[in-house]
Length: 102
Image (tube, rainbow, N blue to C red; front, side, top):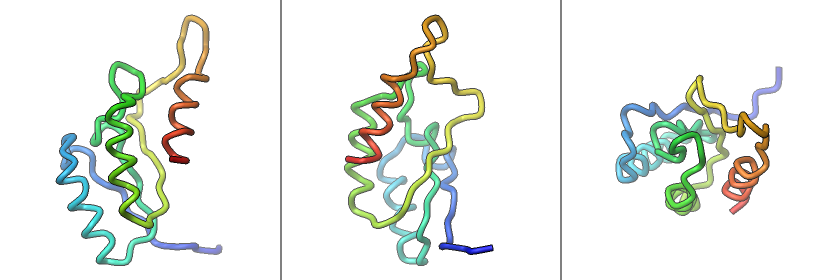
């Protein structure tokens, strides 16, 4: 097995949507040498009513630019971002792709 780095998952309920707490956790992880961080979508409030909250997503991405981590996102287990009627996921996935590449 080839291990590429050490990562940690942010605990969503401990953040409760507070960007100051979010950044303080990221600062701590930077000091400890962690390379990968799993972001809890429910803890940073980037999803609202089953859709990406673009305003909040922009705030989170702006905060993430201060760090050199590699990220993954952990949505809540029951989340489904597809439009069930038309099964059109393109807008939500485009939003996520834009955010991750910004």
